[in-house]
Amino acid sequence: MPHCLFSAVPTVAEWWPIALPLLAGGAAIYLLLPRPQSHPMVWGAGLGLLALVLAGALLLRGGVSPETILFWSFSAIAILAGALLVTQHNPARAALSFTLVVLSTCGLFLLLAAPFLMAATIIIYAGAIIVTFLFVIMLAQHPGLSDADDRSREPLLTTLTGFLLLGTLLFVLQRYDSRINDSARNVDALIQRTREAAQQDTRAAMDGKIGTPGDEDELFNQFNKLFNSRPDWKDLHAKAEQVALAWSDNDLVTDPAVVEKSRARLEELIVLGEQARNRLGWLPPAENTPLSNMSGPPPTVESEQVRRDEAGLPRMPAQNAAFLGRSLFTDFLLPVELGGFLLLVATVGAIAIAFRRS
Amino acid sequence: MTALPLHYYLIVGAILFALGLIGFLARRNLIIMFLCVEMMLQGVSINLAAFARYRGNLQGQAFILFIVTVAACEAAIALALILMLFRRYSSLDVSKWQELREPGEEPTEDIEPLPPAPRVPPLPHLTPSGVEPEHRPEESHV
Image (cartoon, rainbow over all chains, first blue to last red; front, side, top):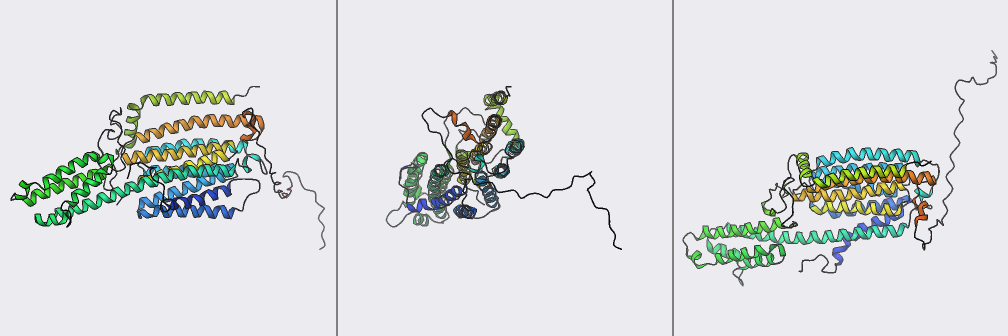
């Protein structure tokens, strides 16, 4: 299978789990967008809830842990409040639902080990939202319906645009994920088989585990085939072939310590498999990326050398804020200065725009 | 225990981004358009935070700080624009700025009329305090 996301036409089984919640959500947003003659709200709200439930069922395939429950609640609140922000007639309520979006995003930041960003986002957006609220109270308080709040520009076309974009993004993500999952499952199965072979007590039993009646090196051939299937595994392919050569070497077979030495060969094969497993979903950066290791392992570190926790994720620095500051003031010193300059220019520009010329 | 796959966070970010895009294109209230842009930025921030977590590197979080900076600048400019629009047209409707369109373009007009506003029920009239209400002299039938 070529290593390209758009290589094949999607099958029906591939696209319908994504298309169903998308269609329901798109119809809900379309029905709920403000317009002079509103559709009954029940239809839009029901379709929106249906879309959320369908999307949740897509996610449910993973199993339940506290982290997943928190993730579901935060993301469901964020998406619901986002939909409310888009469809709400009253600007004050829209601003309130935007606070909900920000708060649940901050929850997701905490789940992603970013406590400093959580605090900073809450503090900054609290100020921004209060100012927006002041503006709403100052300017948007007129009785009755208005062109600004009760009409939409091209509701059908905008909904189509947004959900086409979303569908494309989701489809690419799903295809990428299913590729990675397939590769991971194959590697895991092969590693498991190698472990079983390494636990045997005699060389003959190991050979029995490794080969099948037609092909006595079947396990090694499987490994080679798998390592050939991804471009980032090519170097592992050569190493696996060396292991296979050493395995069927005559000196090894006649050696008195044959069981121990064979087991060592199989252990090498397991290490190779685990390296391949770690490289999945890992984008290799350019060799000359000029970034320091102030914010974590430098980009040139191989994925199998990164320290990982029990769940298989790379470890983050414990002193999050301190490392973030070091990274900002070493790797990103010039952007920080530019950001400050941008703030100054924006302030000057805002005053110039809003200045009352009498 | 297994961790959540990276793409779950990417999906949430993508959904927030698309919702913000729809709101920005469809809504006509300048304040709500501004809030929708902020929501798109939140979606991108979730993306960056997720990539930072799943690579064990804080550079993604440093990027989010820059996004927050740009969002603050954008908020300043947007609020100035809101003030300008309201001063000139006494309304927050961005379609009032149609005169900025290209020379050959047709103006968009709202064909469908807005329904009449629901009538506010008359509130009871209360006697102002401090003034003694008129009342008839007390009569006794005892």
